[in-house]
Image 1 (tube, one colour):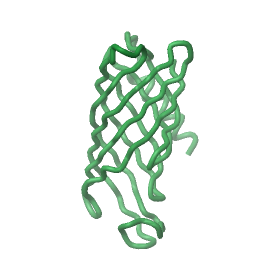
Image 2 (cartoon, helix red, strand yellow):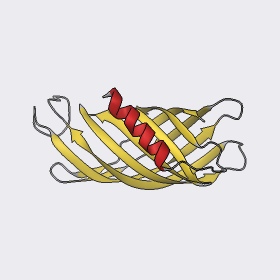
Image 3 (tube, rainbow, N blue to C red):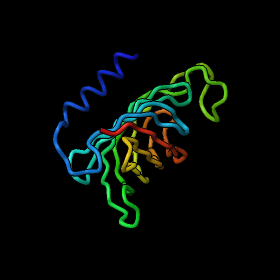
Length: 159
């Protein structure tokens, strides 16, 4: 598992290596909310970033890729708001007896589309980035539908 995470971070970093005028180029850290895991955000233009998420939820594992547009909030230095979208793939509910849906001991493959909107703050004197977002999703296939409960806080090391 550790090798997969390192490979994912490396591929994302190398695939979009370029100089930008954003507050930071790349940030790597943890995402905590209804799902918990890793997050990597990389700016590909001054106001556009890609974000990759690897996280767990409902005793499953999801991989999400997002494209985000960032806009400054001029009243607060380092604060931006952002919106965007992307897609995810993963599995949920393998043996989870506490879910409000699904059959016990059954796994479901989930493929879907994501939206995202949030706030992103980069401390001026420290390499720390905080992000608070809402990421609704539409899942396709068995047990699909709208999931609007994913709110998370990301804490990243920015460089």
